[in-house]
Length: 115
Image (tube, rainbow, N blue to C red; front, side, top):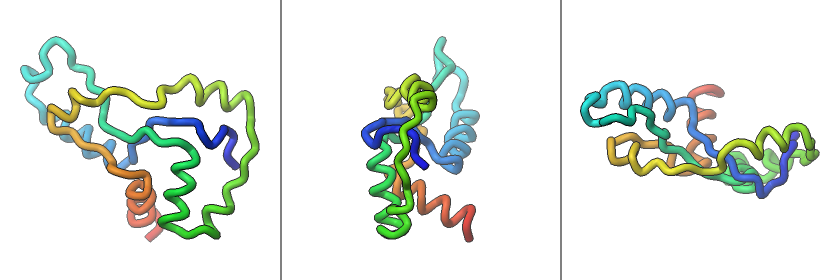
């Protein structure tokens, strides 16, 4: 059940990539961070429609067609309060990386959690 419009953009980072980024961030020398130790981790800005398209690409149309759309205003208000994207130039300059595509996130989930 998808409670938001398909054009809704969200910022995502897979658990595997989040772990990798946290470990890499821990290894960054404190002096390189200067007076701003907070870093936005690299991730993906993706719409819900793009997520469903990626699901279709990885798992097939039959699986993707199982997504049902039922808008929930209460949930929309929460999701719309989240950033749909943010600037990660600094993290990338420090050598941190994120997921390249949402299809890669799905493939990693299948490999790590379903097999």
